[in-house]
Image 1: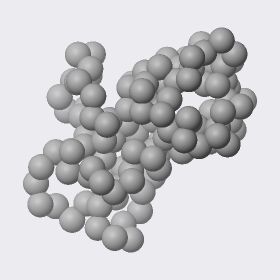
Image 2: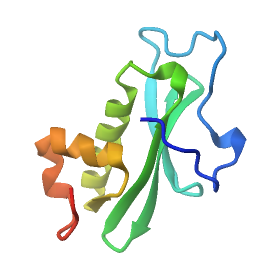
Image 3: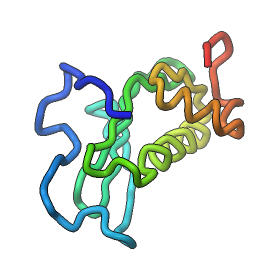
Length: 124
């Protein structure tokens, strides 16, 4: 799921990598927050940035352009949890979704309960 680094994203904006911190330990709280200044939803495990979903807002729509989970958190289902959270938020806002990010598009294909969010005329 980790895609090529977005050149518009500074290194200190990347999810935490490597290390042996306790982040991601069982029972540790996961939260997803919108950072509109960076145009992305961020997923945190405790205080550690574990991943993000970048977006572009258009009238009545949110286009998801890139999703990334730090390598050390791979295999824990965090990408799916992030996808569900951002799609739930799009629904809450009444926004249609343009899934430009392959991960978000794939998540929608495998979770038809989100198919109604996809903007008309969008390939998914």
